[in-house]
Image (tube, rainbow, N blue to C red):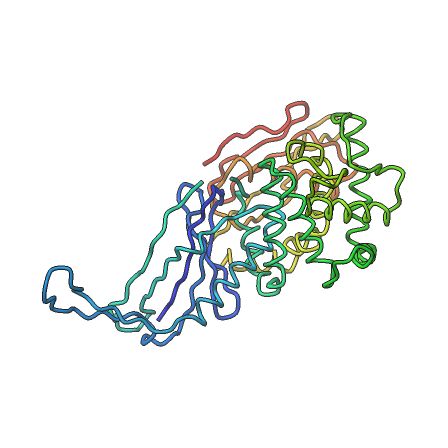
Length: 399
């Protein structure tokens, strides 16, 4: 028997050509409609059919009595394992895109596998959806599925990260600051919470120190260009790294407590004063996420996903044809074949293919003068897009 547990997607997330991704003895999947995610789930195979719900018709004695009895087996271990795996997938993706799932109203499905007699199994479902954004490319979600078994420890910290970033966008600035601080504390604090101990823990993180270095540059550039009014509660330019972390910890303490007797208290009517402090903390938090995000794009996961795509015939092959200027004459050369793990030919895929094709051509023929580059659908022969000197990239067909 196959047991499936899935959860409705509550926000608006775009995805193209999703396929099941097998990890161990389970398979992740995404359902969609009009390229919008509808649900995310996992199915387990080769389970005993005795675990499926059984129904028995009753003979009601009076109106209001039950007409059917449903007997359900204990599927808690399977439900817990699937839910934990999907939460880990969510956490892995969070720095890139937030997929909000309705864990309170899951859908369970029971079905016979090939060669099994159909025991009359069925689906149990409930819940309703709500209404943000995501990546059209299913590959990002697929690689996160493949990575999720190693990311259980991210589940709780990433809840703070997601809540903090959501609160920041919703102008709930004090809540955002506290949530993002809790994320850093969870990831790097090692159980410490006193001022000196947590500052020492922050100073011991190479990733956080690198993030602070990059954040200093970002904030300096903003102050010199678009945000001349950018203002932190401390002077970022004159303080060293340890002093900056200390100021961040002290502000967190200030925002966690409030007393009318305290002359230095923060005013809930003036939370705008902390907007840029939240922005700095968001830069640091996202920087700490980078190591996990980068794993999603590893060559190993990309190869695994491409294998699954080929198994499901979920692949498009494109030919790259380049025109060179040779002594004043145009010479057309077949330059490369590009394979992508999706079926749909979209404008976004055309632009991605063109960028990769031009990079490859310039690397392979550094001394040649490129006049034009064409991307052609290998299967149909239809020209997908074309690059010509002076013309940029033009989309010819989306068939």
